[in-house]
Amino acid sequence: MMRLIQKPGNAEYAPYAEQYIGLLPDDGLVLEHLAENLRMTFRFLSLLSEEKLLYRYAPDKWTIKEIVLHLADDERIYTYRALRFARNDNVELPGFDQDSYALYSDANQRTIDDLLGELATVRAATLSFFNSLNDEALTRTGIADGNFMSVRAIAYHLAGHELRHLNVIRERYLTSA
Image (cartoon, rainbow, N blue to C red; front, side, top):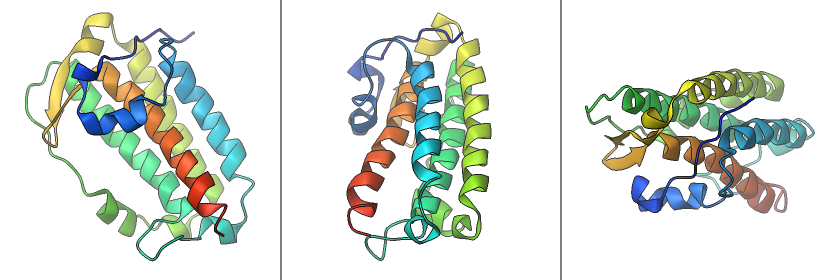
């Protein structure tokens, strides 16, 4: 059974994160949403052809395979930030260049099953970590890439981030390809 984590107030995260956090209901079930998101991502993406997985709707946009690996990379980084903040580490953390990560990821040379398997492994660690935190740790905060965020806001960010990318795939990759 997964613990309840109350949705953060908007004072617990930078304004940019609303595009992700705002996609989640205020039901405290963010860990359940993360688990369901992964099942939905598997069902949705595992049915796509290799041609669709490698499609770019514009020259500077990622392929769907690169998006999947981006989800895993982003989740690793944000969960690391949550770990640091939960343990009351007050050192400001650096940002990362997501476009550079995608460029050097070699995601397009991997199978979708391999990429989804990696995302599943990362998600299992994420769920275990957030499920282990007490209420006080969830409300601790820190700064990364110049942005303030609470630990629980990171959990909601992760869940919404995946939903946002799935919406973009539906809107820009599957209607255009």
